[in-house]
Every structure is written in structure tokens, then in C-alpha cells.
Image (cartoon, rainbow, N blue to C red; front, side, top):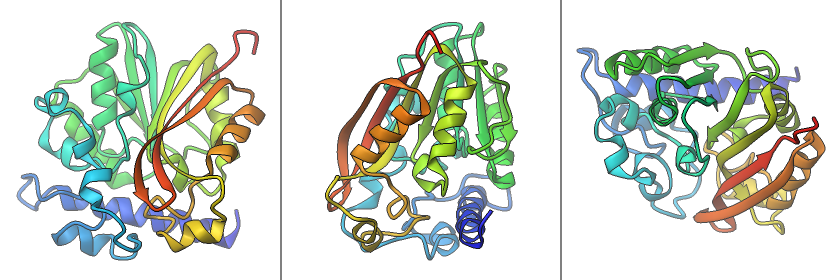
Length: 270
């Protein structure tokens, strides 16, 4: 692993550890929102993650992107810890009895929503590399009385799950944070059963933006500088073996940068 990769990964880990700690006060009660540029402790913990204030971040990242009716009965800490750019459970077409994996599961909101949708005969895994987020997610699962969930420590480039064990892979604004995205996509392909599918929310760049253009719009840790372009995402998914690939833009998060829904399918003959 290169020094640059180590530096970026540690910056990501530190930023999300700070966000997890900011969700809960010392007395165990929920704290303020953890939006990247939000008020209070969360902003202090993430002081270097925010790029220029092109848009109102509270409207393009976090809990505002979920239908309140779907999160009303979740633990408040799970909702407050949402730092994503979409709602992958709303686009993954989850079905009763399926096994779901959330990459970079954070405070657990998408795992808990997935567990509800697949029902007691299904199961939802979350993988995260940050101890503080794993602690928060497990506490949220306990508070939600969710029994068909499990949170595992690991990186999304080297998933702690066996091959062909997952029906659906979801992720919410996390793949853009990886410094080895081809490895992430290969791991997604490996763990999916033949015919398994991907339903991911992520930040992508318009094709004309160079890496320097992307970096000028925000930091890597802030989900901007590390984003793939639409064409790069499409090409890399194809190289990993996926078919039926689509990248659909949903909302702008910075000039030329968009939240997107990414879908793909592992061939039945894989």
C-alpha cells in the first residue's frame, strides 16, 4: 500500500470516526447532525473534509435524502449518522428472503432499512473499517431490535465475506472514497451470487471534468475529489465483469458533480 493510499485512508477513517462520536453525547443521548459542514463537534471533527460551499450540503448529503416515513421508527442516532448522497435501499428493489451487503455501512441506517425490507427470512450485512462507526451501528441495531443484521470490520477493497454469498450489494456515497475502486468492484463481483445485483448511490463527475477539476470542487474525504466520471464508472464495472450497467444522475452536489444511482448485474453464467 502506498504512502498516499495510507494517508487518504487514515483521513477517511478519522473523519468518520469523528462523525460517529459526534452523534452521541457523553450521556449517551443523540447529538446534533453530523453533516460534513454542519455545526458543533461534527464540523470540528471534519474540518478538512469540506470543499467550497457550492451548494447547501444539508440538502444533498445525509438524512434529508430519505423519506421521513421510512426512518421515523429507526433510532435517532442511525438517522443522524447518515452521511450519504442518496438512498440505495430505495433503488435496489430488495425482496423478501434476500441477503444484502452494505459497503461502508457507517451508523447502520441502510442496513436496518434493508433488514426490514428483506424480512426475517432475509439478512443484511454491513462492512465498515471504522471502530467508532461499528460500535454505533451495533448499538443502533440493538435499539431497533433488529435480529437479522450483522456488522463486520473490514475494508471494501477486501471484503470479509465468502464468494457468491450475497444477493444484493448496496452502498451510499462510499465507493468514491476508495483509492482502489477497481478492487472494490472486483470484490462486489466476487461476493455476489450469479444473477446478483448492485444498487449503489455515489457521487460521480461529468465526463469532461479532469481529476484536477474534481479536486478543485472539494476534497477526497468530502466525497468529491475521488469521484469517478460517469464513463469511468461504466467502464470499470464492465471490466469487473458486470452487465446491464447504468449510471443515472439524481442531483447536483457541486458544479459538474452529481449524486447518482449506479446499477449493475452479475451474469448468471459468471
